Length: 319
Ligand code: UT7
Image 1: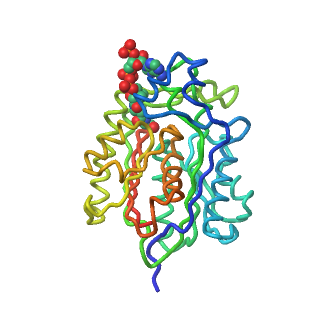
Image 2 (image 1 turned 135 degrees about the vertical axis):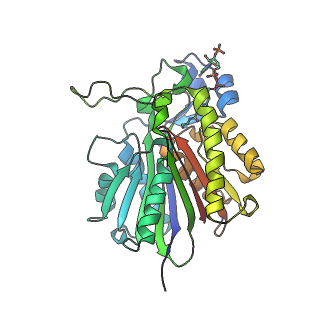
């Protein structure tokens, strides 16, 4: 039978053990729990201590493989979405490939910041649909804490570290129904992390963001791309069981849900505990909703994310 779809058969995630609450941050940043929770919905975040991006990716990968009782040797490809790789090269994907024992399989990183996981899923889906790859592990892993300027209270309270992973396999049933990806390089200065001194070392500068402007574009673009993805799939909002949005701000998530006319009970919100983990945000949220019994096999789920680039993407999947 022809296997024209990719289906999610495994899912996993990992958070570094160190939890930093808003009150913890307020000890060295000019902020308060009241401001952070009311403006963003964030109560705490996880930060790495000695772990690297590849360590988080490796743990999430192991958990995803375990959930499907799947041997790494059978993987044909590993794609890691990240903006905070351990090194300029080699890729996080190559590191994970070696450590999980998937020797020889195609492995590479994708850099599309907070929309990175949507990009990685879209690429994996196309690779499987083209018939050349059967089993692809897709990971979103970030150590955003290393990009934080602790003097900039408007950004350093927003982000966290973590990783999420999905295992896709070729199947004759969907699976991934439709993926839409977009970018607009015009707004580079609104959200970026410049390289400070590339000649002397590989230091990447702190993340800078014009939050207000990004907020408006994020709401608008995520709303539109969900429309586009549903239209491409010939589906309506009413057929959706779950919305799994990028976890950047509760107010952004509420605005998108309102546009979709989806009650908040059908929206997965993990921002309070995870904060914004960039490319890891959607798979982390998805995995926690599967583990706590909300998302079930056969549910129609729409994922959506938006980030620096600017980049944005959406993926409609029957779980
Ligand atoms: O993942 C990539 C996508 N990222 C996003 O989508 C993030 C989008 N943007 C946002 O979520 C929001 O714009 C922020 C959470 C970043 C900011 O919220 P805001 O309601 O837009 O606040 P603001 O930037 O307009 O600042 C309001 C006030 C300012 O004080 P004044 O000028 O009114 O006196 C800020 O200085 O809040 C102040 N402020 C803070 N106060 C305490 C900014 N950050 C803090 C802070 N603690 N951490």
